[in-house]
Length: 94
Image (tube, rainbow, N blue to C red):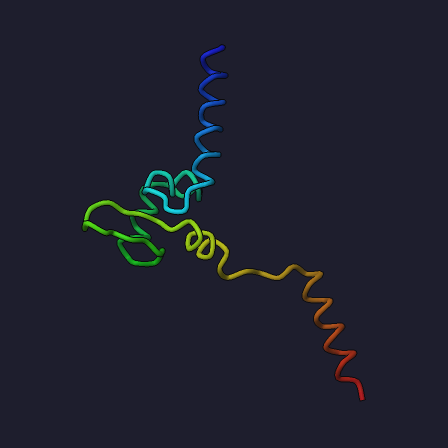
């Protein structure tokens, strides 16, 4: 039981350390984004996700670009849409 607790804490510490890096390896990018290895390979092979391959072998990911990619195609909440509709209606009254 103690070993399991130690391993869990070590895993949390590793994830905290990854959070402070600017450039992530393939495995770190998988852990950071929660994307499976096979799907991340598919995204990189089809050039859908931003990545670098400096020596033609290893893959690296800039954390800032990963976050931007993850947050693309935002969806507005129902409340945001209603607020915008009300503001538009009030501003276009004659």
